[in-house]
Each structure stands twice: as C-alpha cells, then as structure tokens.
Amino acid sequence: MNTEIKIKLEEIAFKKTVPFCYSCYKEAPTGCCSKCHSDDLMRLRQGSGCEYGIDWVIEELITEALTPVNTSEAFEQSMNDCYPETTTVGWMQLDTVSVMKEMDPVCWDMAKSEWESAEVEEGNIISFDGGSTYFWKSDVESFIEEQEA
Image (cartoon, rainbow, N blue to C red; front, side, top):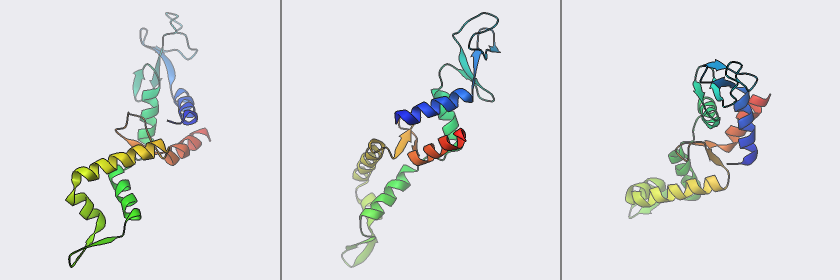
C-alpha cells in the first residue's frame, strides 16, 4: 500500500479513537491511565469496541464508507475493452467474454488473478485485509480528502 495513504489513514484512525486502559476499563485521553498510570493502551472507537493498534480501525472506517471493488465485474469489463464484442464460431456470433469464461473457466480464473495482481502493483486497487477485499485507490483518496476537510 502507498505509504502516504497509510500515514493519512493512520492519522484519521487516531482522530476517530481515544486511548483506552483495558485494565481499569476507562478512557485515557492523555495517553496515560490516570488510575494505574499505564501507557500500554488500546484504542477505543465508540460503537465498535477497543483493540490494540489501529489497523482494525482503518479497515472498519474504509469498509463502512466505501464499496469494495467487484473484481469479477471489473475484470470482465477490462476484457470487454480489450477484445471484440463478438466472436464467430462456425455460423454463430457469440459474446467473446462469455465464450472465454465458459470454455476454459480455469484459464479465466488464472487471468483474473493475474489482472488483480497487476492492478495492485500498478496501485489502482488497495486491500486492507490481505487481498480478500479490494477498494479503488481513487475512492480511498477521496475518502481521505473528505475526512481531512
């Protein structure tokens, strides 16, 4: 993931959460628990819960605000853009993408996987959960701009 995007999302996550002492079960907005004086604090997001770190907050904020990329649909559209709309098989005019998907589904899945990898490498899509769900980078950047405004 782009380092600049990661830093901005971390800043947003810190603003949307407060330090929380789980031992005393109370907020510690100064960064140190006033009761036990611990600085080993979780992050509390109202309405969600608390946990160590902020990656979970980033994932939650993005998931709530943005629609994930339908990679199957996006890949199919990409193939429609690359190949002619129809293919002639004998006397029949068939949808090219449908023929590719139905005639060799294994090859189709491999090509889709390679397309996803290329989109990640080019920085067009971003994942916050190890590749299970992707979001368009432009949507994430718009989200960041909205949060900073």
